[in-house]
Length: 117
Image 1: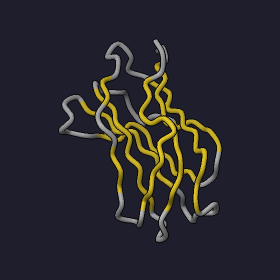
Image 2: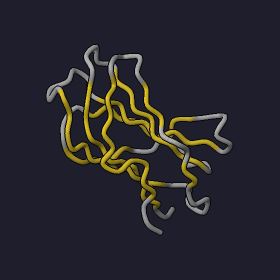
Image 3: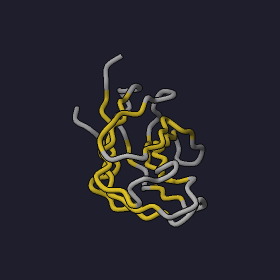
């Protein structure tokens, strides 16, 4: 089973602390409950944000009741992993937000990789 891509070279713009972006729901393979979350932040402006962009992967069984699967604030370029907080439900989506008072612009890729128990 290959990765599930939530964003590939996605250019985002978050204007203030109240801006939030959510992607569409993506169905994930129900045979896997545990997943690794990987991200690659290619560009970010300004280059030294206070808190950076908060990457959250949300999960749901029905796309109505939503819980956070894993979350991390990223303020520097490069790749990394986010540790999941619980088991994956049937659907996943990406949520981007910031607590910086200035706007943030960047390019980001986020994907999920299933792992065995």
